Length: 440
Image (cartoon, rainbow, N blue to C red; front, top):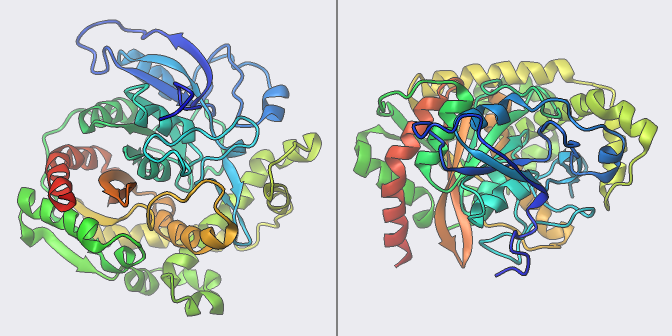
């Protein structure tokens, strides 16, 4: 399928042996790769950009998240390609975290599910390494969607944990209010084992969800037929847990009613958008406003002094971020608190919220701005739900539509990561069966 046996996924290849070789370790015999945003002792953390690598020294210690899975018995085989500085220029008039997976300096990793499509970013190489079966699992980061999107595009599992649930020391920050350490796997059991180690949570007996809320308006954003998306999930939930726990809500209305600070980000243009959900579009605006401010705080001085060579369309947007004034930062934090409280009330302790991961299959490589504008706007509306609330989210593959991968996501209350991992383990086999029935 690809000329490069590694699908262009790797920046550096090396071997870090597990620090515990005991056969009873949960990750014994497994291999993994890490995004080039994690410190590994003796290697320069490149942050997806040659100028960053040139102006920084080799790391003197290894990120705790990497050390944790090494202690768990896994072997690291290298660092993976990522989008430059985890950013890419949006076609709408804002700088946003990358979800494409393209890098003009190091090349774009090849999507193993769809070679003529983007792999998703910014954790592109990490997702490709798992999707191409080069490694058993990989580590990435997710600020605005950088684990969930490539997982969806590459047809694998991707987990964004609750905010602050996994230590981010030794990881280059982008926007600390949203940064998370996430991971990819093809197998739900491996996904769960990695999760329990990173989360430092004991293995718990499965708990049945109290409710699974289908966000009807969110599923309407998708261009995938509902019988292959929402209905596949509903039938699987009914088979495993019973139909009585399935609920249906219009999430946009609920958010509009319970997050009053969104008024600061709700423009007339958003209210009139027919292709999006106004309250979630406003949520996306709030998220990106705070991300730009924190990005400037983290990297503005380096950008101003080094003046790195940036890819097409991104340079202007990066400098806009660097000169941002921080207007509405307090309102952004209010939105975060209000959404967290609102969704906690909606889901309770063991509720699940179901949404599409993104509004459709991965876009084609080199797709034009006109093609991507609406898709990206809808995507960030969906991605901002977990991003702003701090809730955990897992993206699960649902087979192929027109020979392109599609996915659905489940969200749970902040701190309910172990519960959500167990739900994935319980549900995944039935979900695959339903996908096979639908595809026949």
